[in-house]
Length: 453
Image 1 (cartoon, rainbow, N blue to C red):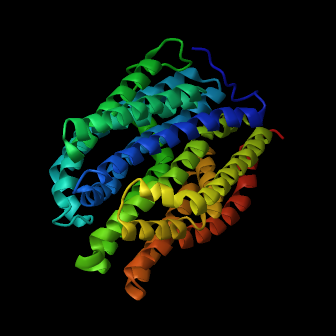
Image 2: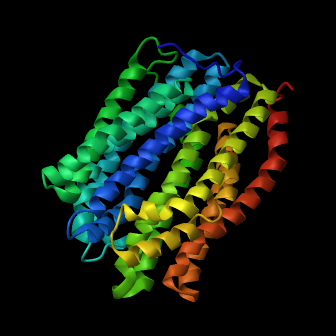
Image 3: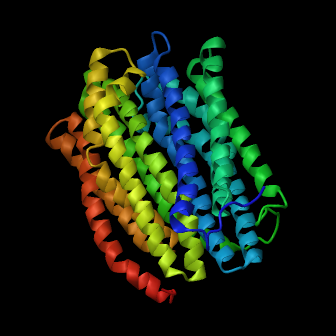
């Protein structure tokens, strides 16, 4: 297991690409297996559209559970990379072991809490009498596997932070390929329907969890996983660092819950379930953009954090330019895909002509401002990598606040369908504010660290 990336000395552009591309591909594959789940569910004979709406209601709750892995993984990984940059391997090892304990405790608490509250949560978050049974079946099974989901996602960040982006990609791809293979077996061959999709997902997460833990336990790992050295102060620091990405995902979940609720309320008995089904398809498409781009920005955080720890301003500036450029190029390509291939994408989920036409239109509206979003993502994530958690958190929450305000006002003032305008408005306004704040703060951050030119 040779380490292929020297975060402090390799040429910046190829280094960023070597870290970014595997993590982007890993997230893309992760998105694909989530989408494949929904495609299979949407094509279950007779009940497909309602089952898809039910799983759509579960989506934000599943994301909320996963955000706790982000709290620990993306909170601890930059700290570990900084300690490695400082040459302090002992402290880096303590960070890793404390993060493992945090994930262990969180998985137990969250499993118990969500199993107790799942019924009420589903009613609150947009389930209808027609979709509740499907949502409840899926969420019960998924929640039982919370330990594997949190460990696989959270601990994978520490492989990437040590320069093993290829292993990080393998972790995700293992789960994705297994899930895609198991879905038709459980859903159709064993006739388990929505429950089968949940079983396939949990089994794939078990495999990813085993893979990542085995990799981190190997002695040849620069900072291997060990038991002990627990310290509450380290855990607090990890939680502080991880607060921004955690709130980004957690508030995403809240916003999706509000979206489903608003669509049900203003869509009424005639249109509510239809709009929730459309929103599920739209969100599936948006994940094709946001998760790979998030993989790019989060996968390259170790370059920023390591060189910040080493005090190398020049490499930080160069890496930032490359990361933002890659995000813009990716989103530019996805704009072309949106306006050419979105009908084909929607056709994978439904054969209903009206549902398909609505979904294609909503996708084009929802993704209209992804170029500004391509600036927002790297600035927020790399600001976190520099340790500027408060600034990153403000920029993230500002965008969510704009989204929430639009989500509550537009349907009430215009129509239920106007809720889909909330995303592009929030993307444009937030990217403008974030860019201004970053350009003002970035030189001060580097100067405060007394980085070398």
